Length: 429
Ligand SMILES: NC(=O)c1ccc[n+]([C@@H]2O[C@H](COP(=O)([O-])OP(=O)(O)OC[C@H]3O[C@@H](n4cnc5c(N)ncnc54)[C@H](O)[C@@H]3O)[C@@H](O)[C@H]2O)c1
Image (cartoon, rainbow, N blue to C red; front, side, top):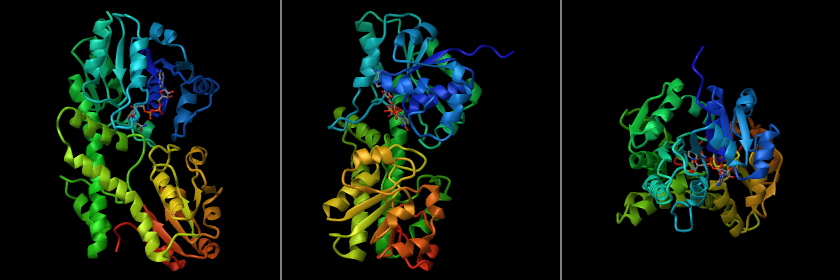
């Protein structure tokens, strides 16, 4: 019989917390989940999954007896010594990370020689040191601290948990770091053991690098448009170079989501607060903001003024296979189109509820073809796979203007042109 797995707690049951809880429950751990959102906990207890993440509902149902949900920390403290923290760290107005939820968790911890906080939330370098100082000042020196940043991607979060590229564990060399490493042992992933500050930086630097790669290829795409090269060919030729790699060389209308924008900005601010001006990241952010708006000039090039025109947006979530609308490019695009006098009609297969809340004045359709009805132009914003199955000949009949801007270079240009559309991608010849 395999040895019993260690019970753990997860504080914060959002995208990261729920996936972490489900993943460890699959491995056989009892998981005590805590959240301050009583409605979310009630829904989880009733077997409802509050977010859309492929496979998550099935995973949670499969390990339901090992998952415990509560708004009360006490059972978690009683049963588990490792307390994974997965609360939100959204940006403040200044671009720094808002650590108030992290501080609330730290404040709620009792003095203990038996427990450790394991930080999954993305936090600025120095947060672990500051939390340890807080514990010491309050007579809680026995409380241990481990940085274990999370690298999952929404949309493939469970496969990412089960098969991580690496697990980073930053600690001070006490029992807690070893216990976290043991917990991940069945996944057989490369483990990077380091100090707390370096672990915190691995996360921020990884996201900043990926965001830089996106802004870089977007700028190459823009130069391709000016010079007659085709960015898809260019990206293919670049990506085969092992030193560059093909991932994240897909040009589009900018990155969004709950992580890249805030983490890039948090790293830039962190550097600035420490006296270093991180010029490259300033450019990465600016390129991304401009990229979201370039679609407007593409539309104007074909349609002239946008006043009185109807523009359909296909896909609203920040990427496919999630209902997450945080920092989605669609939000900027819809607001800019409305400001220019256009009517915006939109469709997303999953994110509509959240989109309705965030996009006042936008008309929502209940199918892709419904969104195209009477439109002068359509912009593919999020590359949901079902959009490849649209009958574009039928779509053309519903649209007085047959213009398609493919913001993700996702659709087949030849098919669109055959159906009578003027097709324009990003950086394509
Ligand atoms: N979403 C991602 O793809 C992703 C990937 C890697 C890392 N991260 C990082 O993980 C962290 C969590 O992100 P998320 O997307 O899961 O956030 P989220 O907003 O989906 O979930 C956060 C949860 O924490 C709960 N919470 C807030 N304060 C609490 C408290 N004091 N006690 C208990 N629960 C509390 C909220 O009610 C919410 O359910 C962030 O720091 C984020 O940067 C996110």
